[in-house]
Image 1 (tube, rainbow, N blue to C red):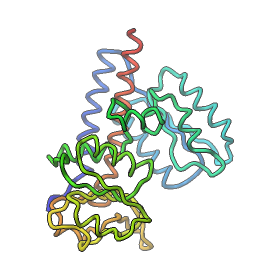
Image 2: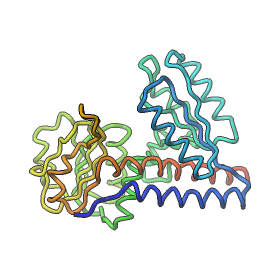
Image 3: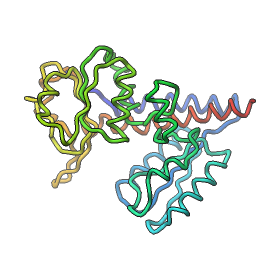
Length: 286
């Protein structure tokens, strides 16, 4: 069994980004900039945003965290995004999800300039991704694809089951795998006899937020398990959607939780920010 070490790979990606930032600053006089909007005081979101800000600083990316109270109106939030769209120092804009219930997430995400949509959630980028055109890709699925590449895992022609159909992971993950010529089945919480599908899969990507849903008797020998889930048990321990201890001896490759897919998300977000800065440089040259 090979452990897919997302933590180590993420550090490698961050070093790549650091080099690219230095080159942009020296050769193009451009410092990439990322703005993160944090609404409310959700502890998990605040921790994640702080980690993003730290990673930006370490890579030499200019970053700003715009904290807003949970009582903020949708109009005020949209006005803030509009100002960020016009700010030439900001290459990427990211709205930390989830948003309070009184705010329409779709309207907010659509308000972000598609050329600054480093989260890859704007319909413009989603459409281009599905059409296999150049686009900003959602960071978590993007990270999984980079992991496949790093570990020499060929997905073309493989049977892949994606468990979960969210806009953030499941749907874009399926699209990227289809673009890579995999045979993809998407399952969700209403799928009857989930094991019927997973037992036939060469690769299982699970992202549903249900601790230990995937068991060893649901996968075939030599399967590859990519666990995107992260759940906190009553004991305080973090665990994935796959039962790691149960599955590990039956897999050829598996991601741990924590330390697997999670760290890749920030690494690929930084990659998207660099991409946005390079696109800005090209536009300014015209």
